[in-house]
Length: 222
View 1: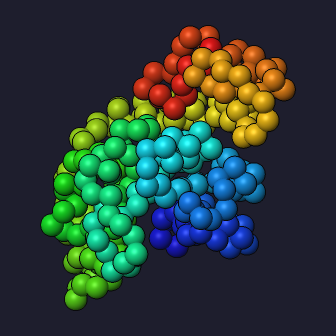
View 2: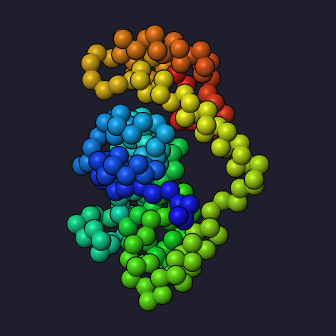
View 3: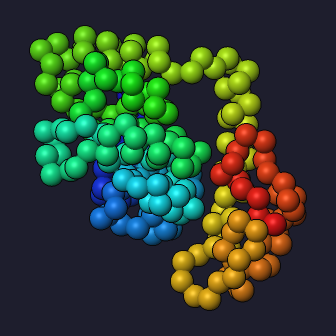
């Protein structure tokens, strides 16, 4: 009705049942490889991370974007220890995936979060707790958009084209580096012996020693 993608939080079964656009999972929810196996590669999959190691793992396991652990103290997750600006900036630089800032974000600090590297913000209290929800939403959106880098339409198209290439290649790259079993290092990938033939197929698309321009997630694989 509103032409906005709908993602279900935590519940992969609900996402499957209603056929929505995707799902967002946390560290204690269904593992990302299983989520991808159930939803396929045409659905949006996000993952909450607290550490840079978790961010890198989520990238390798097929996440489309990341959500941070709480940046500031928040009443919606009082048990969560805030990671602060330093922790959040580390997540943003650890991977090339979009990272959304979450936790205690409001009109007063949204700009600082964006300038720390966020691709956007997720907000609850600052909107639903406002006297005028519509006004609060518009004000926050304006603040976020004013802080984001100014990309031209041409830059946006180039980015979209490269992302489409990565999406097309990513199943090959993911399949050759499953978890478990004996592994050996090859370039920047960990390859299982039985994945060698698939790696060679991937190399036919991503040339040995090369990277797709502007897409570090399609990292050098030979």
